[in-house]
Length: 262
Ligand SMILES: Cc1cc2nc3c(=O)[nH]c(=O)nc-3n(C[C@H](O)[C@H](O)[C@H](O)COP(=O)(O)OP(=O)(O)OC[C@H]3O[C@@H](n4cnc5c(N)ncnc54)[C@H](O)[C@@H]3O)c2cc1C
Image (cartoon, rainbow, N blue to C red; front, side, top):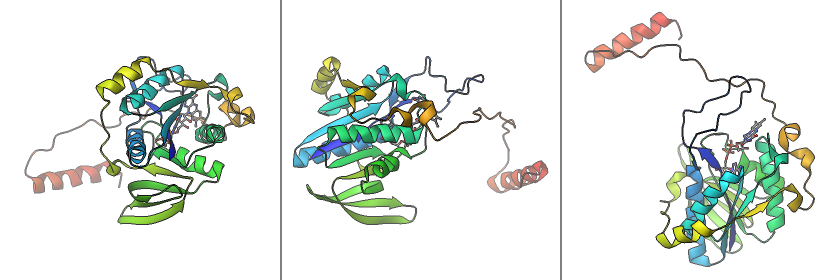
């Protein structure tokens, strides 16, 4: 079973700062990590490979520094990593990102399963997985919390819902996105870390993907237009409310009413 896992490098903070002039995210001096949901995606791919054989390939679209997250997954046991990096991709929205990743799938060709995380913890849209599936005409199962059965030609999985779960079956190739309930990601092994240190991922630009239409990527090719981005100003100061729970709740209700916001 050949599995492709899409992974994203994200900033290691929830305190994202925006440049007030340009409205873009300030990345300088901010530590970057592998998107936590993508660790579960990698772990699940490795477990399937251990059971069925085959190969796990990770793919990330990002700047050259994103090689670091590829190396991390090599340390976990991934076979191959591909970095998609090209100036033509700068300013791409989720649709342009998904178009690019779908072109990567076309070039890889021989795969049975694609796994993504539920969402990236910075962009937070959860759009890229479903959009890649739409671009490639692949069946998709979102929010997978357990793979019940998998063969070379089909998959049966539990999809997490607010009030329980659905069981869905799909032919392969297919794309699934996974939630953190699915497994416990392994740490990198010592041997894996040694291998990762020396590992050089493949780097592809748009010219490496036959038929790639650059008009569909970058700021110009992105259907999303961002008019304004800003960090909301904190309106109120924090205040400790003393007393037992019932008294404190009554005081709080009074304060909310005074604010005239409900
Ligand atoms: C107009 C516009 C311009 C933008 N310009 C830039 C820019 O110049 N530079 C920039 O870095 N971002 C840019 N972005 C943000 C970028 O489009 C998103 O970060 C990206 O498309 C992923 O969306 P998300 O973070 O919501 O991921 P989600 O959809 O929440 O991610 C779900 C899953 O998809 C996979 N995935 C997501 N992104 C990637 C990726 N890049 N590579 C591999 N797998 C992935 C992962 O498995 C992830 O768990 C821009 C966004 C907009 C709207």
